[in-house]
Image (cartoon, rainbow, N blue to C red):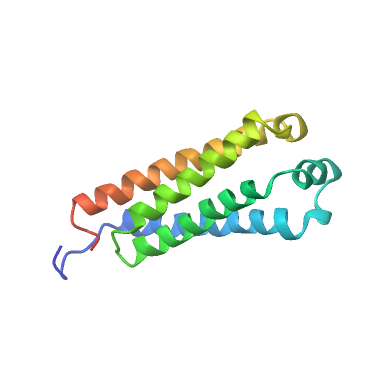
Length: 139
């Protein structure tokens, strides 16, 4: 891509929306880790027994995604790798929530739906960043 090639507006919109999504998710991580006593009692019980590695992979998802979105805004190829890290994080976290913990019994359908949104969003961001690399939009 030469310096005069203009990226489509949808690229910038999606990059900004991705950054906002991961900023929102960082607030969820923060509240789960640092404001546990402010959550409803059932969620406190659920999160208080959650192993530390689940918080680590959630942080991988959040910070990998945030940095990936910033990399897209700066037109950097490493956005792809960061979105892959983010997807690995959400897959690991979702596996624990769905198959090991009582999250579905405690929180109901949101415990299924929200991780699915994260997985789909992660896959979309990987596809977009890979496409942008192929088209020469990222350096």
